[in-house]
Structure formats: C-alpha cells, structure tokens
Length: 278
Image 1 (cartoon, rainbow, N blue to C red):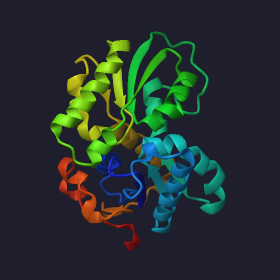
Image 2 (cartoon, one colour):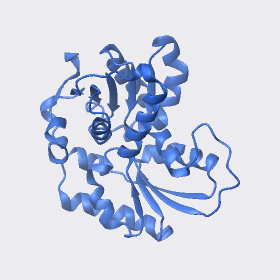
Image 3 (tube, rainbow, N blue to C red):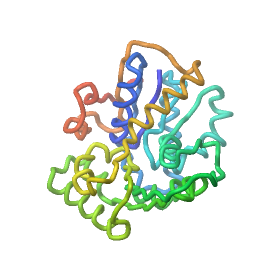
Image 4 (cartoon, one colour):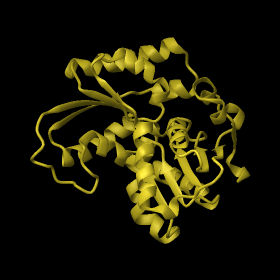
C-alpha cells in the first residue's frame, strides 16, 4: 500500500493520476484538513505536521509515502529524509512532488546538480504556487543548479487555496486566477510553459488555461509525478505492492466538512473517513 499525504484536498489530483497509472496498487490518502492550508504556517509547523501525517500512514501499513503537497515537499521533505526517517522508520521511504517537476522543467536528472553546458536556447517558464512555496526558493534554486538557460518566473497566489477548499464558485476563482496570470505576464508576456506548483491548482486548471496565452504549454504536475513514481517502482520493486486497486481517503478534520472534492473529482475520490479509524 502506498501512502499519499497532503495538507488538504489538493493532493487528490496527484492521487487520481497515480491510481490511473497504477490501477492495481492500493493507496491510502491522508488530508490534513484540520491544519490546512500550510501556506500560512511557519517552517517548523510544516515539518511537525508533515511528520505526523507521514507517521500516521506508516503506522497504517504504508512503506512508501508521497508528499503530494508542494509546500510540504519544499519545506519538510529533506529534513524528514535526513534527520528523522533513518532512525524512526528504517526501510521506509518518503518521496515528494518537487523532484519530478524539477527534472521535467530542466530535462536534467535530480542527481546532476551541475549545468550541462551543451544545452542551448533560453526557455521561459512560469510557476504559480503558494506564497510559502515561492518564498522557500526551492524550485528557483534547483532549476538554476541544473539548467541556467531556463528562466523561471514565480508568482504567489495568495487566497486561491482557501477559495478552492472553501468551494468558491467560478466567478471568484476565475477572477483570482486572471489577476495572478495578468500580473506575471507583464514581466514575461510570452512564456514557453507554465506549471501549477500547488496540487490544488490542477483542480481549476481550465481557468489558468483560459488566462494564459494559447501558445504557452501548461505542464501537468499529476501526470509527471505519476510517471516518475512508476519509474521509481521499476527501480525499487520491493515497494511495488500489488493489490486490488483500493483507494481509501482519510482526513484529520471532520469528514462531513470536506466538501471541496465533491465539486471537482470523480465519485471514488469523494468519501473521507476520520484518520483515527486506521
């Protein structure tokens, strides 16, 4: 069983892609709705809450957990991997959504931190994310290490996660997105590509698509992460646990309050249980 952790419901976009790519895998999802969104939290709070969520999934029987939250991956992943996991849960693994995206943006493997001087041609890419992810500088730093020819422009989107989680309608969400895209296009009017660096944002990707220039490629983080996990499992088959394709959803909040998923996702990804039931 593979665990998927997110600060709320945004990681369901990752879970949906993972399940479609690996339909015989069993998945256990945990949304930390009681503490969402993480964008308003301190770094230490994010590390503490992410560790608690991962531990819940480990104790429920997951040997591998995906951090399906860009903020948690940017702030907490390295610390948990290096300082906590080896002693607390040797043999288990935590992966994040940041690494596959950096590889996709740069065309360079994660292990290759030094730029390939043979690469030619500038590429302009927009990143839309939470304020916390943007302020962490993680994407900017890792892209610059590997592909200095890529010009990455970051745009924080404050309030958008709250609007999505709160079930705001089309007009307010499209208005927010139109404003964010319009601001960043003033600095980079003809971007080659854009990607949504928050797993909530693919839920409203059509609004981003409508606001962006038609020639701008919109990269799909869920599909990229799913392909990366399949490759990881091919390299580490001990973590590939074939099952029945069961998907179970847990929340640290009240299941009856987790309503956002009903508006955006298929029936199989709508029904949450209290995390204390595991």
